[in-house]
Structure formats: structure tokens, C-alpha cells
Image (cartoon, rainbow, N blue to C red; front, top):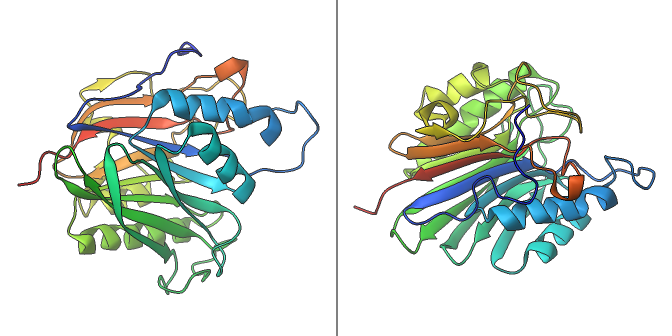
Length: 278
């Protein structure tokens, strides 16, 4: 089993023009006995330590309830601006979104879309989803390179394969209509290379894993459920990017800060360059 040292970042800070993109399903907070591996109180410091030490330029998170979002944002400090939104019609409940390194990037626009036939109606559901699903996007200006780009975070449905496919098609349209280079980070709830991933690839938004010059780790199943990760399980979390992005490094994190698994999912990292503004 490949294991990164718990006290050493697998990627850490990067130098321009590279961007460090990271996605992590936080695992929503539920009532658990003290010390249970799934208890947020048990995992909270490990999550903060992981994110703070890795220093992502853009971090996508899924399943963030409000107390968890507050704990994370407070723990890592005000260098990162949180753009998070819950999935119900009022923007409450389980959230997805991004945290942006404001020392590198400026947030110029915030958007959200319901993953449904009515994407502009918050909280709407379609295609047999168990719950409302949505995407949160930010348009960012990279102050170092001058490049403007779109960063999207989402969490596809766990029940309906049809919903996952249609949601991926909608994400592809959002990226295409933006006219911007884009990074799409998600818990896809489907294996890399499956139908939702292929639907995005058809419009030029492809998995960074196969494009990377170097893999810092083997490819591992990212839903590890607080157990040793396995290479024979699917990678269901990932970072996708539009054509033209140069991907230098990727990794699946098996770090356990303080000996604690941060989540039932493993973080996925991609280091990429979108180039300078033409």
C-alpha cells in the first residue's frame, strides 16, 4: 500500500503558472459516538491539517454542512475565500462549492445551477435523483498569469445513472457556454471513464489523471470508507479540465494527519497550467 507521510504534503504550494486543484468530499456531519471514525469532531482537525498543508489554489468540497464549512474556513484562515451553497431552494442544507486562494486569484463572479431540467430553479430535481443536486461555479482572475477561468464544483447523484449522465451533459453545456478555460471538480459517484466522464470528454472536458506528465501516487479507489484504499476499486472523485490545460502532476491522497482519516473519501489533486492570457 502506497502511503504518503502524514506530516508531508503530497503536492503543497505550487509556483506560477501552475494551479493546484483539489477536490474532497468532506462526508456530511452525522451523529456518531465520540471517537467514531465518521464523527466530525474526530475528523475535523485532520481535514483542516490536510487542506492547510496542501495549500490548494482552488479546493472543491462536497457534502459540507454549515458547521463543517465554518470549521474548515476558520481552521485554514482567511487566505481562502469560501463560495459554498446548499442544495435546497433556499441555499441551505448539504453544500458544494469552492475555496479560493485569494493571494493568487480574485473571485469575479459566483454562479449556481440545479442539476435538473430547470437549472436556474434552485432546489429543482429531475431524472430520478434522490435529492436536489447542484453545481457551484466561480469565475476567477489569476492575478499572476492574467488568465480568467471557470472553476466548477459538484456532486452527482448516488442513485440514478440517468441523472449522472444528464447532469454531466449539463455541466458540459455550462463550460462550453462560458467560453472560458475550466476546471471541473467533483464526487462523480461513478467510475473514471464511465458514461458521465465520457459525456464531458465529448465536449473537451477531460480527466486530468490520464493527461498528467507524472503521477505522484497509484490510481486508487477514492471511496475508502475509513479503510486502507485499494487499487482495484474505482476512482469516483476527480479533476477534469478543458483542452489546452497542461497537467504536470496528479495524486490521490492517502494522508492521515494525526493518524486520522479526514473523510470516507480520498482527496484528488491535479497540478495544471492554463497558460497566460493571450
